[in-house]
Image (tube, rainbow, N blue to C red):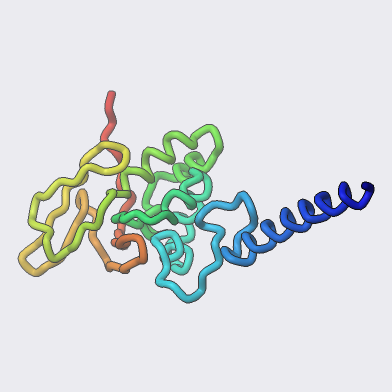
Amino acid sequence: MKYLLIIPLMLLLACGQQQTDSTTEATGAPLGGGQSTVKDETSEPDVVRVAVGSADHTTLVTALKAASYVDALSNAGPFTVFAPTNAAFEKLPAGTVEGLLKPESKEALQNILEYHVYVGVINEEFVRDGMTFNQVNLDNVTLNKSDDGKMTVNGANVLGKVKASNGVVYVIDAVLLPPDKK
């Protein structure tokens, strides 16, 4: 009788341990981690990994972490991200970035970052001068395209484009600030 009780208990413990191990092994991520914790060195990088892999976007990555948006932007998308360079953040008034990275400014930071993201892929081939797109924060940006093919978003120059597994990243030379709704 004693053995009948011990055997199911051992099976239960073994199955539970096996499930935990296989989940960690299959995804390469610890349990409870989000999409961004999945280890994948062979697939095309998502929009977050594109930013993480760029030495010119360390401030943006820090902001994404402070706003808790790394996992959201690591998901399937598709997303169009207008990614300001470190130099773009340096153009903001002194203390602005530091202030936005404080926990009490998280909502304002999220609003600014959401203004840089469009749900869907904006293909530059189809952009026409004066097109508007509604961003994640529900404010519009305006894309312009000159005759020579140079593109801007709200006046910020598009410096380059990087295709990602879940969308596209447009590198820009300014931080986009949402309109003041006062």
